[in-house]
Image (cartoon, rainbow, N blue to C red; front, side, top):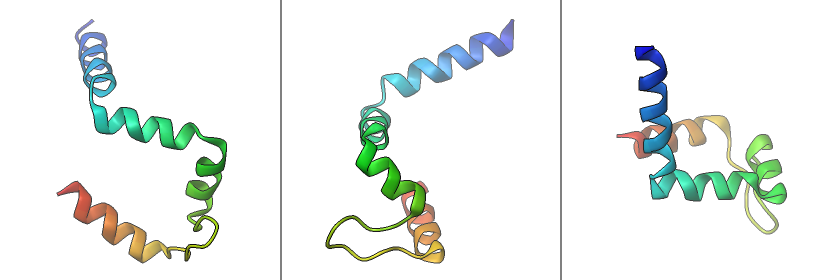
Length: 62
């Protein structure tokens, strides 16, 4: 039962986090989710290679 409580606490924390909410709204947009899945750029933007994306993710996670 302790794992269930921990999962619920984590889920509630995520749902109350504004950054997480905005991210969910962005990835549920059909156009944006396709771009995210292919790691491609949108119309008029350049694409991002895997190393650049990983580097940016690491920078934003610190």
